[in-house]
Image (tube, one colour):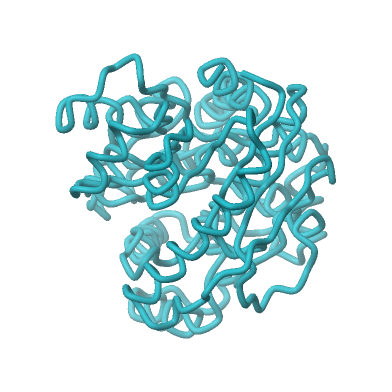
Length: 381
C-alpha cells in the first residue's frame, strides 16, 4: 500500500452511533502504521457540536475534510439518495487532487460511483446487500473487506466474487482504553452504583434502525434470575432519552422495581470501560436474524472481552468466529429461559466465569485497532 489513504465516509461526524467510533479509530490506527490519512465526510447538520477528536478521544494525527452536501436525509429514502450522490460528487472532485492515494470507504453508493470513473477504491461492507448496484459494485471495486467469514462466503456464493478479492477483518477495540486498574468496587463508587448488587449489564442501543436487539429479553431473564438470586440487578447503558420510560415500563411489567434497575442514556465513550468494570456479568442477546447471525462484528463484543468481565452471549455463527466455550457462556438465541440460565451460571459459579473472562481478555489483544489496520493495509497494498 502507498503511504497515503483517503477514507471517504458518508456519515454525520461526530455521531453517537458505533460506526463513528470504528471509522475514527481506524483512521488513527492507519496513521499508527505509518500511513498518512485524510477522512472525507459531508458537512451535515449535527446536534453534536463537539470536536470529533475530543468526542472520540482520538489523537489529532489525521485531517478531517468536510465536503458540501445537499443534506435532505430528513425526507426519507429519496432525501438519502440525494445526499449520498451529492456527497459522492464533491468527494470525487476533491479526490482528483489526490492522485496515487488509496481510496477507501464503507459506503456502497460511494464505492459504486467512484468505481464508474475507473478509480481504484476499496469497499468495507458491514451489511447484507443484495441488489443490482451491489453486484456491480462488487465487480468494479479493487477489493472488499468484510467483518465475518460468513459475509465473505455470502458474496462469493451469491455474486461469484473471487475469494482472493475479499479480506475478512473483524472489528476491534482500543486496548489502551481498558488499561486502568480500578477494582469493581472503586468503579461503582466513582459511578455512584450500588455495592450490594450483582449487576447484569448490557451496553448499547435499545434498537438499531427500529429493530429490536434483545434488550427486553435481558430484562425478562434478569427477572427470572432474581427468583433465586435476589440481589441481581439489571443495568442498561446507552438508551435514547425517549426510551428510558419505555424500558422502565418493561421492567415494571417483569417485576423489576426501580431499586433493582439502572437505566442510563448515552454516556461518553471514555466512561464505557469504567461502566463495564463495575459489572458482574455483561450480556449480548442478539436475535437470530441473518444480519446478526452472519454479518455483524459488534464493537461491544471486543469491549466486553477487554473489560475482563464474564460474558453471556447468544450462540450465533458471527460470535463463534471470535468466542468459544473457553471465553464465554453461550445461550440459545431468542430464549429468555436459556438466557436466565446463562446469567445464573455466571453469578453462581464466579470462579469459572472469571476464568472465561480472563481468557477472553487475553484473546482480545489480537483485535486491537492497530493490528486490524495493519492487516487491511497489507491487503490493499
